Image (tube, rainbow, N blue to C red; front, side, top):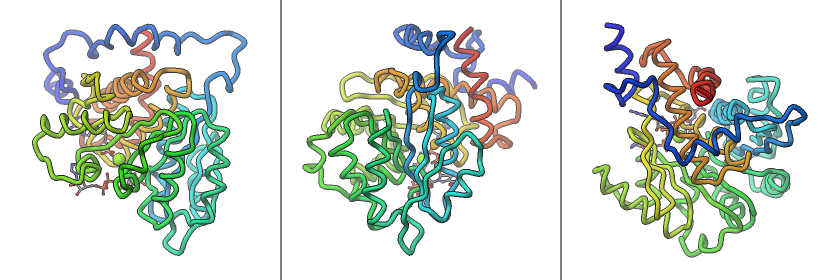
Amino acid sequence: MIDRFRTDCRYHSGMDAPFPPLPQDLLAAAHRLLARAPDCHKYDFGRVLVIGGSRSMAGAPALAGMAVLRGAAGVVEIAVPQAIAPVVAGFDPALIVHGLPEDGGGHFGAEALDGLLALAQKADVVVCGPGMGRGPALADLVERLWQSFPRLLLLDADGLNALAGLPRERLRAPAGSRMLTPHAGEMQRLLGSVCSERAALEAEATAYAAELDAVLVLKGHRTLVTDGVRNQHNASGGPGLATAGTGDVLSGLIGALAAQGLTPFEAARLGAWLHGVAGELACEALTAPGMTAGDVLDALPMAWKALAE
Ligand SMILES: NC(=O)C1=CN([C@@H]2O[C@H](COP(=O)(O)OP(=O)(O)OC[C@H]3O[C@@H](n4cnc5c(N)ncnc54)[C@H](O)[C@@H]3O)[C@@H](O)[C@H]2O)[C@@H](O)CC1
Ligand SMILES: Nc1ncnc2c1ncn2[C@@H]1O[C@H](COP(=O)(O)OP(=O)(O)O)[C@@H](O)[C@H]1O
Ligand SMILES: [Mg+2]
């Protein structure tokens, strides 16, 4: 019964090792993150800005922000519409939260754009989209970030929905590295097509990543990480991750790894691996039906430990 339960929590059942091995080429990068100098300080580990949230979705940017910290970046700032700022800050005292002007629907308003771009200037990585909703100013925000932010911009959730509404010719000249983390539904929206077969969707996603010169993480069972040329599937994780908010955790985690100096392709692959291992650990402790995204966050320290071993 116990063995059956353990294998239900992961999709590499049948392996002897407790977790699927990390691909060899990521080991050196992973161990660089684990080794900290005695005189280090938080700004050695990068700053991430999370932009997201809306009146009904305060949890998504909070989960992403917490995953930035559990992903070992030194500092996270979270920018949200002002009405939800106290709620988001209440998730954890380590979060720095900025409230920006909102429209009547509880999304960022047009007056928030300059403030958001100013906050981005200090960040090594911007994660934009979790819980952001679909307000009228958001396409403009994403277009301006795409064209002007000179470091890694990671778009997830409603950041991707805003991107899907922009003509592709306006995305030709990004100012820095770009990463997209869609689930299958968001990927189809980006492509503007319905593609229900996974292999065909992966092929289209790869071509899309190449066209945009972006790293793309197509999430789900055996998450694909592609930069349009290199394609890698993640081997960790399992069905316990099919619960609200786990994608928000992944976006913050990948942002944190990139802020610590991993390349976007490395950060996406290591992030997917750690996230999957944390999902397996949470599932083994709590069952797939019983676990939540907060449990994945709480299991991330043990996933780091698995990496260290
Ligand atoms: N506590 C919170 O504040 C939470 C907020 N969330 C936010 O909710 C907003 C909507 O996100 P949703 O993920 O619901 O997406 P959407 O509502 O944009 O898309 C969901 C649609 O895509 C379809 N779909 C096809 N393949 C899918 C797949 N593999 N996974 C999921 N859906 C698939 C679904 O059937 C559904 O029709 C985002 O801003 C997201 O960040 C969620 O992350 C959940 C938690
Ligand atoms: N059946 C599954 N097997 C493995 N991983 C899964 C499965 N279902 C969902 N996941 C993972 O859970 C996360 C869900 O992300 P997403 O759909 O964006 O959720 P949300 O928007 O609610 O945060 C992704 O990392 C995805 O790979
Ligand atoms: Mg999501």
